[in-house]
Image (cartoon, rainbow, N blue to C red; front, side):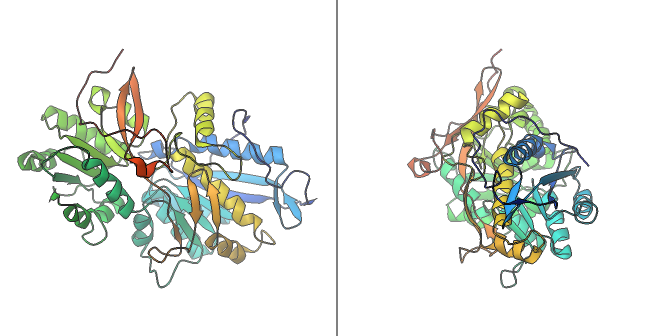
Amino acid sequence: MLTLAGVATAGVPLAACGGSGSGAKAKRVIRIGYVSPQTGALSAFGAADRYVTDTIRAFFQRQGGMTIGARTYPVEIIVRDSQSDQNRAAQAADDLIYTDRVDIVLVASTPETTNPVSDQCEANEIPCISTAAPWQSWFNGRGGDPARPFKWTYHFFWGLEDVTRVYRNMWGQLPTNKKVGALWPDDSDGRTFADETIGFPPAITAGGYTLVKPPSFPAGTPDFTIQLDVLKRAGVDILTGVLTPADFQTFWKQAAAKDFSPKIVTVAKGLLFPGSVQALGQEGNNLGTEVWWSPFHRFKSSLTGATPATLAKDFTDKTGSPWVQTLGFVHALYELATEALAQVGSPDDRAGLAAAIGKLRANTIVGEVGFGGSADIPKNVAKTPLVGGQWRTAGAGYSLVIVGDESISNIAAQPGRLLPYSRVVQGP
């Protein structure tokens, strides 16, 4: 178990949550559990978790706790490391439920983390909110049935229909031969993206593109020779896929050695974080990815009052690291948990808490989140907005530029246009 000490929160605006000076003090403690990939192959997804948890813990300390009904309760946040392993993630959830006796479980960072944790919570009747995995990977990957919604587990994020729309918008900004090569591993995300019904294949062909599909591969594969031979032989101008940062780094270094250089690269998961792109050295310029959240987004926290810009700046000031996309979504997890807890009469009413999550409508730092409000997605799912982005060299590193058209102006500022991929030497 990770022990995360509280830190000062200067630089992040704090708004009242009703805890300070309201309600009788309760001896019972509200315990929030969080499962995070702090170590292992997915640790880049957990890079913001310590900062956000420290900030939220300090916020509740300053507010005197959390008010539920007529009482104000102390808040304890307990974090357990999934070690980027599905079995360990399930065990971490079990430990939170039975050892730590938490009231609600939060989890983020790919289906390998969200799904086993959510399954444990559903089986043990513990309210759970998850994020940072395409909703189909979470819902379909768990065998979900829209006619029989999950009772205890809820998820907010974008879906495959959103990322295909964003990528096709990016592809249409440059002339190409419309041949799209796809790298889909044999894991939960890869199988979902490759699905012939709900995944990328129908969206690619519907846009007038030709799909080139190399064989799938296991996560952690050391050799992409077969995939590269297929892509080069087909002469693809566009590369897409969904790989872990480590797998994309392996693939891209081998691609450079074989002189494979498509005009457009839009890869999910593997290009989300500045550290992942920085690890590519001079080969990362103009690589594209989806953008869940950025300092340029036009939202505000319902809990702390922070904006994306102030939260990102405070994160960099505190940690010395560039902002990361998971930052906003982990923060929103705590916003939703707080809002749901505030709507029940007692923290001991687990069924009431799960029902409250299912009725949530909240304006968060990642946008409006509302469950059960759309007929085209499961009741346990709430969707968040998505835009496209491209990494550009900036001095010795990279910056992420939002690319798109005026249709995204209500979501994020700084719209730019896609540039073709090119290998350039970084500045000193």
